[in-house]
Amino acid sequence: MQSLRSFLTLIVVLLILLFPFSIGAEDALIKTNYLNVRSGPEESHSTIDQVHKGEIYPILEKQNKWVKIKLEKKIGWVSLDYIDVQNQPEAGNQLKIVYDQVHLREGPSTDHSITSFAKKGEVFKIISYNNGWYEVKSEQTRGYIHERIALEEKRSSCTDVKNKTIVIDAGHGGRDVGAIGITGVQEKHLTHKTAELLKDKLILLGANVTLTRPNDEFISLASRTSVANISNADAFLSLHYNSVSDLPRVSGIQSYYFLNNSKELAQTLQSSLINISEANDRGVHKEDFFVMRQNRNEAVLLELGFISNKESEQLLATQAYQEKLVAGIINGLNNYFCN
Ligand SMILES: [Zn+2]
Image (cartoon, rainbow, N blue to C red):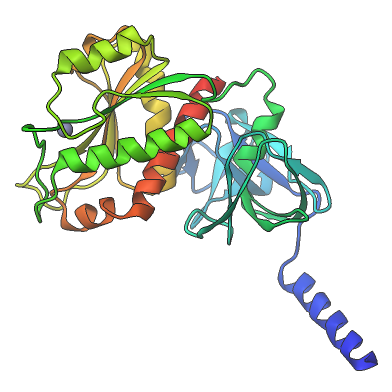
């Protein structure tokens, strides 16, 4: 019995040594979109990456007006002018969930599977914290939760998708199949799949959701737009997948807006989609598409991937990747309505 206790103590000590939990360490909360990460603590150093508004990275070092941050795979410097420095949370503290149906995961990344859902108002004890992920437990369950969900609690003026009216427009339908993938996937089926999944998640979060095309049928562009105008939508999202058969290697996500009132929505969604999917960032563009021009409300068109690229076509059809895209859109909407 005595030896068992010594053994367990040794294990605990080893675990503490192996996974040092940094108390009093600091994080950088990025305050601007597209902030350059440089190889050294001065403007003259080359740009090695970009970070985006709302993202959080551990601070490794400070020098004059610069901080060294740890990205997922790189280390680099950002200017102190464009970040907020905040203390990393400490173990033993409590975390209150501010959204309904928050995912608890098996490990500290979105690659880990979802083990349970936390309800709004539920309180967890923080076991550890690492790279933006809390390890938490309650009497019923335990798992990992991303910091962004807890940070929202501090933003008092913040509203999220709850009670917002979102119109989701699944591109194409019926005789208009849209783009055709390299192995024959039809764009109209994929956009419908994403729209349904997005609708379900948004409804769980308390949003009012209308689909312009609930079934596989042909709907004119004018009817799609009038659905948004009649329902006085807070956001109109037209979902599409791309194809360029001459360039089978092209991949990535791009977002479009036409009226200036929709630019920020497009930027926020693009940034959040890239963040979560790690897809190639093809940027935000102004384009005169009918569904956006004729829309009285904030309206964007999202090209969520290339079905002309064989790898992308396979990936896009998976449930796991669809979930990522939907999570990217929802995070983006939350960020957008929070500003
Ligand atoms: Zn399309």
